Length: 82
Image (tube, rainbow, N blue to C red; front, side):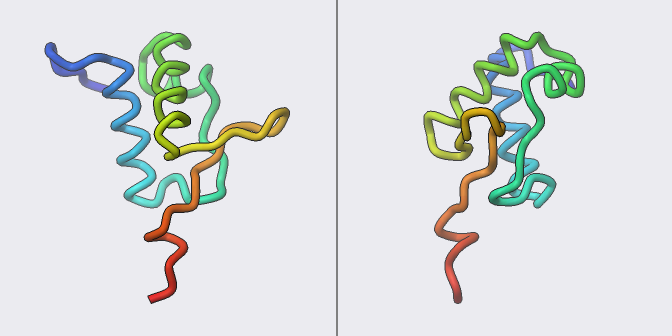
């Protein structure tokens, strides 16, 4: 993953996860990779991956289940029947 000089790495990782969600790589209700795997995939430290995941948990993009993992939240757009 290429990083812009003025961009925080954890924010870039969070944006990449959001992009993957938007493109359907990570579906609502499905697990996202854990910190170690994300760190390797994106070439960042586990701490950076953790900070990105924590930001996405805080804004409701993701949710976690103790002992199970971190999952993509179901959004109004994804859950709405139109």
